[in-house]
Image (cartoon, rainbow over the protein chains, first blue to last red):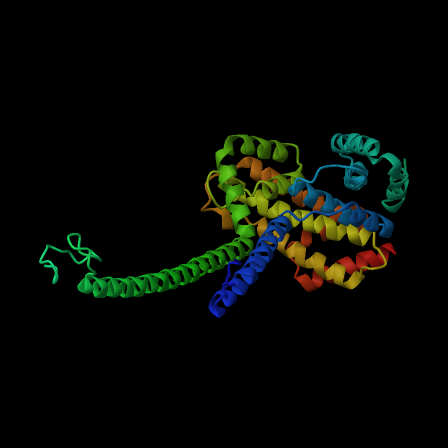
Amino acid sequence: MKSKRKKEKKSPVIIVLDIIIVLCCIGLIMAASSMIRSFQNVYYSYSEDTFYYRLLEGDYPSMVRLYYENEENDVKEEGDLGEYYGVAKYFEAASYYKIYEESGDTVRANHQKKKMETALKEMGDLSAEADRIKEQLDISE
Amino acid sequence: MKCPYCGGNLSLEDETCPHCGRLNEQARQHVKDMKHYKGEFEHAKKHVYIATNRYTKVVVRVVIIAILFFAIIVLYNLGERSYSIVRSIGQYQSKRHAAEYMKQLDQYIEEEEFFAFTTFCNEHKIDCYEEPYMRYIPVKRTAQNYMNLYENIMQLVCPTEYQEQSSQIEQMTENLDYFYSSMDMEQYEYYEGADSESNQRALETMEHNIILLLQTYFHISEEEAEQLKELSQAKRAVLIEEAIIGEE
């Protein structure tokens, strides 16, 4: 004898509530990803590409600012980023070397010269930028 | 009750008389009535279970929806306040490690590393308007403006095709304004330790560096550089523009 099993029909209220639950779950995922994005934006950093394009434009002063802003957000010197940092540090040191050299402040000038030498080592494949920087700043040596 | 046939004792549950074996008519009606009432009871019980079950399902779903809504609101609020949360955590940490951080800041001032000083303060969310960092306020404010000014000056020295010179000069003269105003020590008189010798020296060094940058790269004379402080923004812009055109 077959047992007749009646299929339990879901009430419309339950169906509507289930739909609302599904929508709330989607909303929760969106809220969570929005929150994660907000926290990531607090630690905004500049990528290698940003430094590359600034270098292409010859915008050394803004590379200095980008370097320090990355330092603020504790961005590690991974990949080519270390070389771009080297260019920024070299430019900064060279700009100060010139002003101290011309004003006769040899102590500070020598200190900046040492910083230029250290930065040159960090520049790696971008060491050719050193000559361009010296040319831009009219440093003759 | 008594059996109508033999007079023996009977109960309502006896379908037949235990003495004479005849049918108990009264019991038959009772059993029939009991079956009917039991059926109704079971039917009513089933309906109560179904209704309660349905009610429970609705209540559980409503509670889940309420919890999800609350979680969504909390997450959105956390996202909106992300900067202030990170800042608060940073400030708490900076107070915990105050001795270590202050030693580092003093070293930066000593070594005239003003960009590194500013970066360190920003990285560690150091609030110079709160103790124990109040004494660094003049250097912090001035160093930030000094950094902006350095970038403006060097961008005029190394211009790119995407930068408009006149707007660069305008920005530079504006930042010169901020720089000179942040150097005014009178505004820091209520901050303990702000007028220290090391702070004074740091501010003088930054001012001296700005003058050297202008003299070296724009060939502004020493007198003109000294006068810059007193000039209006418009006159500064004219002086710097003339110096740059002269350079070109």
